Image 1 (cartoon, rainbow, N blue to C red):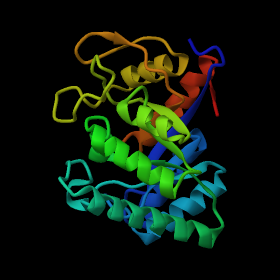
Image 2 (image 1 turned 90 degrees about the vertical axis):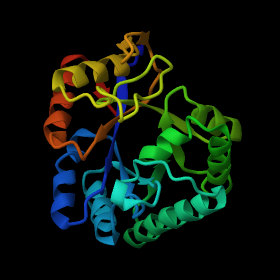
Image 3 (image 1 turned 135 degrees about the vertical axis):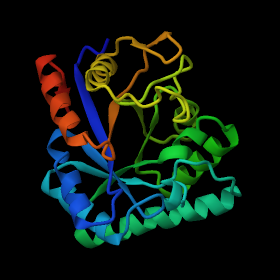
Amino acid sequence: MNSNNVIDINCDLGEGSTEQDCLQDAQIMPFISRCNIACGGHAGNELTMALSLKNAAIHNIKAGIHPGYEDKDNFGRISLILPVGVLIHSLNNQIKRLIAIAQKQRVILHHIKFHGALYNDVEQRVELADALSNFLYQHYPLYTVIGLAGGLFEKSCIAKGLTFMPEGFIDRSYRSNATLTPRTEQGAVIVDQGKSLAQAKALALGTEIETSDHQLISPVVKTLCLHSDNPNAVVIAHALSNSFKDSGISIL
């Protein structure tokens, strides 16, 4: 069990296209520790990047980079079979895009977290995990990397000497091997708010959670992910904050 009873909360956002989308995202910010800002690959544009960075600064939360497969039609949730060099070029362009806007605003960026299918693919393909961890080490070694707790990518990043923050999920179910249940399978997304809050509490405290194949696992996490594209994200964020306070868990 986590005797400190403290947890970091991150949220994927900046995934809309308008100022109104960013205003909606900003309603989540009082309840989280950091945000992962889409940088034009799977979603987002220069307006949403700029406004997301501005809002993160206003709410005094850490801002980070959220690149993925450059495929807005599928929201980056379908694996693309690309030469590694082509993929790295795309990711590098996305990362540089957000860094340039952050520099103009004098906002410090703290971390990098891959999005969607790419996040999952680095847990399934050793050569991809090694190539991308090497890319991050060579070009962006000062950023913390956020990824699946106990996974292949965590091992690869740590072996390279990168700072890694293991992540758990509030609204996604797990398989018994501690990977996420694919979205193509029933029950992959936890829609029941009570169940998602219970899973978040268990992950924060380091106690067992039940997997989609009815096993018990205990991922060791330092941050929990809340998805802003959930239509009830603001309500969930508020409820999560209250639930953690009632359980003696502090949000970093």
